[in-house]
Length: 164
Image (tube, rainbow, N blue to C red; front, side):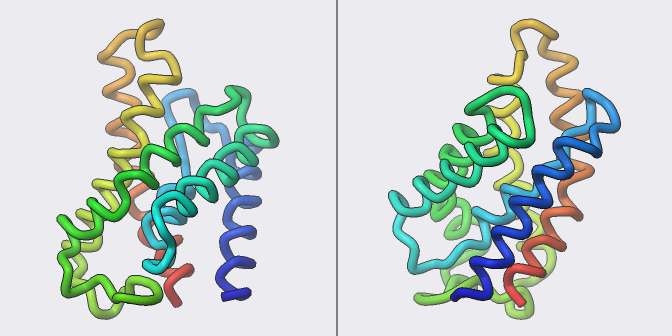
């Protein structure tokens, strides 16, 4: 347990570094945070997961990005729907009663669909709150598609690092 907490803290700090120093373009948004919520412990209740998601998001918002509350609100939204995503996409047979989702036991397609669902649940409110009304819907949809393409392999490898 302590080892996983350390890994999550490292990834949150890495997310801050990515926000601060790897801003390629306003169209490219890289986020490691959806994988941290999706691959959290199954024993964690929804309220506890939502509070920890809020804390992770607010920490990244305060020290990494400029808009306070953006990551925090989107992570809480994802944490609220996390169990639903895991049950409907992965299936009950791949979700352990206790512990973490095992990468080896889940088929790759189901894993990618779960990550894609979690990313959509995170990034749709993210881009709506980030200024969909000021930049236009087409630009926000373009940013969403770019973020999904970039973050799918990123979240896959972050989830693999967490679950090992």
